[in-house]
Length: 399
Image 1 (cartoon, rainbow, N blue to C red):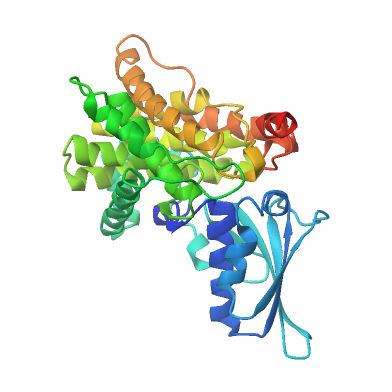
Image 2: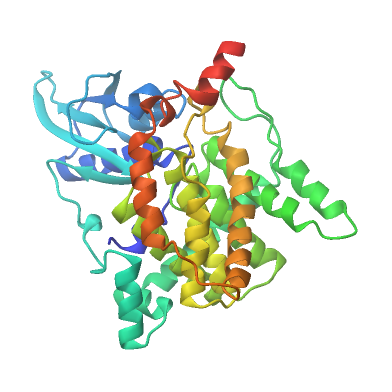
């Protein structure tokens, strides 16, 4: 598996696959080859079909130093369904450099012509079963396992928590409309206000307000944290903000919780996908809920078996979740889905705690990840971030 720090990244919304990954690729391209007067970016797959709604063309043009033409194409013959060709030309318009860039989810990249050291394998174990066996053999905890492989991770995760809390702070204090043709009003501030007006603290509404805050910041192109993607950023961010601000939990322990959640997110990324264009929203929000459930179970003091159970429950009940963003914007149903997701994460952690007293769970985390992978392969392309089916299609037809 890759480093957990590659799972949690700070970047501009609204989509890690559509904005963060292209931005990273363009800036790396410039750092490797220098500046050219002319560029072309030819988009394929989901990047082409929903690139306008996700502002992919704009982020590419802003990230390259020369005059840039963005082309939306459909005939993509590469092995991975989501990507683009990046070409640089000199003053005579002669092609000088070309990259084939794959946007593999969560802002992560693969480049056919250029190996990336941030994709290096850091963890040798490929499944939770292998990790569990190692923990038992060496008598170590999940957090010890993570920090053994990434000694400087805790300091990095502390900066991630700062970014998450700053994102929610902005979201719950900002009003107005989100960009785009949906003309949606931002609602996180009103939700948060309502959650504070009750004589009894409304934890569920508070959590949803925090998820809305992150989701709206992301939809507005603000700085958010991939956890594991920007489209699913509200789930883990809401959990962290709630634990930090409303429960005053120790910062070091919250870093540990992110590390634990990161193990499960990395396993899904390794053995299935975190890309909505590949696996539907089960790969994005489903993974986020699974990560957050594992983190919540850890914070509740649960055992490693209960933590696995929480992560498994969370993913199991997001199987088949489609990705059908209305008009290609990461707004409907994405923002509400994040709000519901953080509640489901706590539900999964609670169920794992008490069901473990009743019987041993029969479905392993590894099983449900493989099931998610196979399910994603069977989801029609129209329901995988193309805005050509599902709610996106019905909404368009009704307008």
